[in-house]
Length: 193
Image: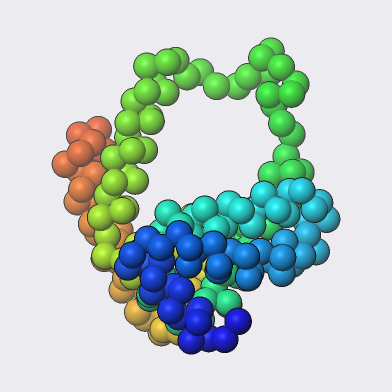
């Protein structure tokens, strides 16, 4: 697929939430990404799930598509890291299969609800970040990329990545201090040190 077509589809998806354009992009990249992912995971079905998850995240974050300069590099890098994460998870013991006797959590329904509410608040703060700032934050914190990898992926300087991360973290701290009073006490203690 030529670069101009990819740019057009990315713009249409980002600006108009165009599902037809998204389907075209998905159909074009899916076979290659599954093959690439399968070369890492060595499990065809899991590779397909990983690639579908990558595209699901892409759809959820579609507003930032216009900031990606090299889409092919971006999508393959996302698939690579998602595949590595799948391999890690595959190697870990699934405690649910072992049974409830080995459950190590001391959570109650109340603490789970509170944690879920806090996660929703944090997610809302992240979603309110400017598009490029949000993309950089998610690539680093959710996808596990290093600053230099993000800089190369987005074709920007490492200093720009650092400054965008500083903006994101500052906004998160300010918002969390307001939204989560218990977090405010932790921030105050750290500042006092």
